[in-house]
Length: 128
Image 1 (cartoon, one colour):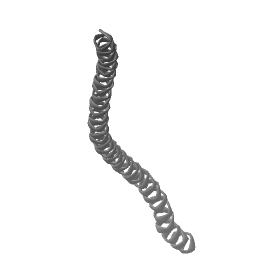
Image 2 (cartoon, one colour):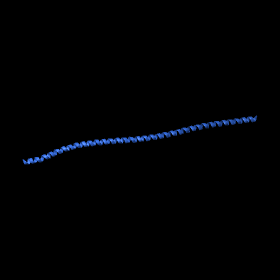
Image 3 (cartoon, helix red, strand yellow):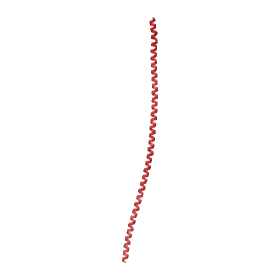
């Protein structure tokens, strides 16, 4: 009987220890699962925040690129307008020069005709 009592006395604490260890192990697994879930949600939240920041940074870069492109386009448009004005002025000057030259040719032709008429008149008057 003493042996049985001694065995029960030794087996009983070992049994309680093993049962409590399993319960503790189960609790730690559950708490580890909760901790992992919490860490995962925090990581996911950080990743979303970083994604938002990256997106904002990309949008800002795109916006600055678009502003620079707009500024360059305006400069090109002003240059094109200046070139167009210069070309228009040159064309006008060319037309005016052409008209003046045409008038001058007509005037020379008329002067030549008048000279010829004057010569004819002089010959006729010399004969008389």
